[in-house]
Amino acid sequence: MTQTAFEIGKAIANGKLDPVEVTQEALEKINAHAEKDNIYTVVTSDRAIEEAKNSHKRQKSGDLKSPLDGVPISWKDLYDSQNIPTEGGSKLLKGRIPKEDSEVLKRATDAGLVCTGKTHTSELAFSGLGINPNAKTSPNVNGSDLAPGGSSSGAAA
Image (cartoon, rainbow, N blue to C red):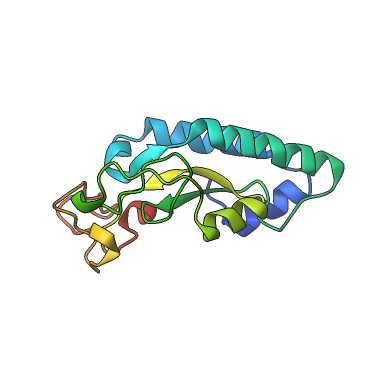
């Protein structure tokens, strides 16, 4: 899939794309990627499929929540996700499991976005280079000898 999030959302709204199929394709690409473990801290397949099915129901009833309803999205491992480790790429937060989603994740879910999982970040998002010696450093898609860049390096990869 090479469309933008807005284009995917528009195609879902027009009935040209099914949010469940879009999500399944995204999850297949994530799981097949050679660098998956260096990009994602966790893939939340069950949550993603459930959210996509809910979006599909809204699509069929003509009651989508937003222009991005049904669009898959990943989250930097800095945003709390209920019952999923949120460690911010830091040993200081190792094993931290929040009891609820962060406010931004709640709002995105309320808008119908589909959470595919969490991506690696530089430690506590403090590096513009995207390098994390304490966790994993995501690859740079332009070359393995290059720094990934930015605190959202996993999301970019």
